[in-house]
Length: 250
Length: 306
Ligand SMILES: Cc1cc2nc3c(=O)[nH]c(=O)nc-3n(C[C@H](O)[C@H](O)[C@H](O)COP(=O)(O)OP(=O)(O)OC[C@H]3O[C@@H](n4cnc5c(N)ncnc54)[C@H](O)[C@@H]3O)c2cc1C
Ligand SMILES: Cc1cc2nc3c(=O)[nH]c(=O)nc-3n(C[C@H](O)[C@H](O)[C@H](O)COP(=O)(O)OP(=O)(O)OC[C@H]3O[C@@H](n4cnc5c(N)ncnc54)[C@H](O)[C@@H]3O)c2cc1C
Image (cartoon, rainbow over all chains, first blue to last red; front, side, top):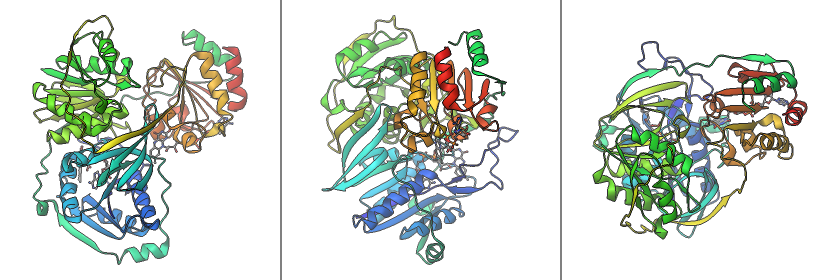
């Protein structure tokens, strides 16, 4: 069974983004970029399936600027077998719908039985790409996974939902999106980082797939959220109780 | 403009709060029809929501467990009549609506916090550190609304209820089981007061002091990701960028440092109280009332004195 894992290069989760004063977007110059944390979890899960003898090959794909090569190499260093980079013109927005359309073409070429994506990318927080890809392929979907078991041509997936946990069974081929508690991704060791440089990496362009990536959404402005001022420090529990009573809060 | 709202149904009952909040958002866009995938008792509840003009009910085993493939096909079969297809940004809404959007060849807008006009919406990006105003050029707008930013519509309406023809079971996925925690506490996303614990609480056993304070206040219990990952608290208590977003009247954070991902889920609370033994903890930068103290002393004392 081949597993495909789409990985996205995003602003590192430790960086506090700054909104540009003219409302044109956020300042991405010279900020640290990393693999989307949910995608590290997706790569880890795919590698574990391979180590368990369930998966035969793990292919990672990233869509974006040329620099997304780093993200792919990172996944290869973790243990993925090969990479595909689909470059888009710099500065052109690729929305989840277009990303999903490109991924659908990659799926057509690669015929994986399982595609594992992150549940959301921590930059746009859209939480959409996996569900959209499932729709375009006519496949079943198991989103927000905290446990994945492959058995009898099915993925049995436990999902983190508002009320607790839900377990569903999805026929393969299928889409899974990862939640935080699916696994703890490994760090790539130095020898593996060196080895990853020799692993195969194909380069394509969105145009190769004949997909229309024209955005459907226009960003009108990007603003700072309403700020919140620090309040006061209280010296004791009694003072806190008094403040809460004063405010009619308790 | 005609709006189709996917009602939130949990355990065979209407989740009134989430649905009524999305109805408030929908009413800003046009005439709201609510689709209830569940029993007629849930549809009758939905018919009471103010501003709802019609309720469609699809009471069919194929929809009983919220399976995305079946729900999405049903919504798509109804979509022709509507300019906007909306849902509250619950795990069900976020699971189903992007699938609907792709089937209609349109983009989805997730976690919208404000309606500017029929095509233009505000949504947070980068863990709420930036707010984007986006305009959609799509024929049908597919949107999930973050419930914490809308007031719930009242319950004095009496809309008509009609049956919707089901689209059947696609057979791509099937339900195995639910593990739902039963609790007498208010629901996290609609509670007036939330008491949350973080890694500082130290263990599952000592989370009981957080729960005791919550119960004294009639509050819901929340947790940071670190507390959930460490097994102190269940996953459905997680507040934050990738958990639940809450905006109660009062949020009490105990032993939580205040990482941006946590703040993303609670910084719109009216009043924030932080109890932390580290006076440099970033949570104090957003807290209205900060108490530098050991939570194992301060929290039980607070519970006693309230
Ligand atoms: C230079 C540039 C500028 C951009 N500017 C904007 C902008 O201003 N506004 C805007 O809305 N979008 C913009 N985009 C597009 C944006 O970065 C995302 O690729 C797209 O919106 C996906 O949304 P999301 O990240 O919220 O996806 P989600 O649906 O949250 O992502 C879920 C999962 O899908 C997969 N995935 C998503 N994107 C990719 C990808 N590119 N490659 C591989 N896997 C992927 C990952 O597994 C990820 O975990 C820009 C893209 C580029 C290259
Ligand atoms: C992709 C991604 C998504 C994430 N999503 C979320 C999310 O949705 N929600 C979320 O919360 N986090 C999320 N995080 C994690 C986040 O970055 C932080 O790691 C997390 O919020 C830290 O939790 P904490 O404050 O409980 O723990 P810590 O940062 O370890 O803080 C513990 C605090 O407790 C205090 N303390 C310790 N002992 C005591 C005592 N006896 N009395 C009083 N105070 C004490 C300490 O001073 C410290 O400030 C995410 C991270 C990533 C990478």
